[in-house]
Length: 628
Ligand code: M6R
Image (cartoon, rainbow, N blue to C red; front, top):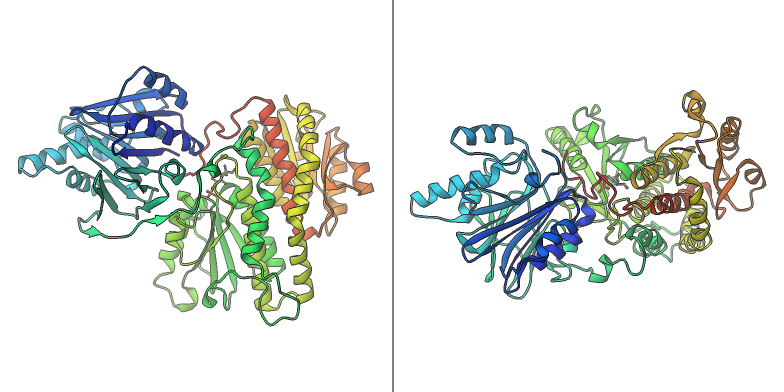
């Protein structure tokens, strides 16, 4: 979604803003712009399309301004055209605003402002904000007390929706005002210089000292420091924190794309998760859990139900989670599309753990679903009260502030829009949670828990082996599919969500139509799509449904489909069934999704790269979907 950056300090702002916007490109956008203040004048330059168009416009512009804001816009209201790009200005062009989010009551505000004589130059919801602030400033000026901070404070109190804004004014050349209501905004502390951004990658090259704004907070940044206030006007005092990232983490480090780098980081991510959450000295029979999630006992005691809210890839990880929680811990689990749950919540069930899964921790639908759950259970008796847990890769995110407990997935920042290593880390979180609950409830023999943990411990080496042995091979194989228009992915049991995830990865980055199905469902409809032009990717791992998947694959072969099998290297029957193999080590079926997803990530990546597409920033997509 949109990206905001802002700067005030001794250096020329435009270069800092531009490089900050480059670091936020991963969020997805279709136009960009910056506004700076110099010698009591506002300059604003905007461009449709990718940042290089803005860069070209800025190239011939000598701009020593030391105060400015910048924006990458992901179009919601109004097409991605220059006149809709941010920053937006008031009628007198004295102040400029950038916004991330949606102003839900913009229609009413726009009509009111028009009635009072405002002319609008864009179709955006954002443009009401500079006009409103200008009106408030006029009112304050008339009273002899002009204050940009106060004008912004009064204006944001009229706005409904989820938004973060940054504001500069030619009449207030020594300050930058920022405000947040349910959309992320971080302030960075430098030495006599201050920054703001939608996300920390834009700040990490300048400072690691940051302050995340809470909902209904606004701040004034000057070269002297940062003053924080509540929307009601009272001063707030909160110390900044130090990020434990370094600038190298947001570089490609020799890889052609962030997505490939992130696929390669997966063995390390799994290693980190194991170090973090597994007691390496644990033995079956020990009177303590093998898992160290440090969850409060009342969060997991007496559970009768689990419900999981998520979107996209996180939803797929949650389906694997459901399988584990039901099969290991014996707890009935439902996985909800967060966007559906908010408007049609299921009836309230007793003693229920609600888990929100979101790598970014900022997905508006997931946050809203969790809030719905929290609010509707607030007045209920004890057994119906909300018990909320978050699984996220961003422990500083809105999710982490919303729920009382989180499992931090420790995957490190993921820049590619297509989730890969964060999916792997979400899966690990579900394995740990399911093992922990199985241990607490004694639903699985300690010996079997030991086997599963041993299996997980082998994973980093096995993942390295898959990456080493398959990357070149998959790259070559991808040539066969550069012109393919449709793909079908099938899997069963714990690997059905991997079929969904394989299909999502392919469509997201290669724009090839792809569908995932439970293998047994194919004959109930999708089989009508099959012919020699539609490859079928089947995930067939030895275990409860191995033979069934092979039979389903045979049904596809009988319709001339080219069959690609994700299956262990030495499975004779699988070798005879599939035209092409994407081999993975033979592992316990229960932990196989952690391996079977990797060849599918590689296949999607190489097809998209061969098609010459923008793998890391696929069209229309955003890394962090902060609007409904
Ligand atoms: O940040 P989240 O995990 O909440 O994001 C949810 C989806 O928007 C996300 O998984 C999306 O589907 C990705 N593009 C998947 O690659």
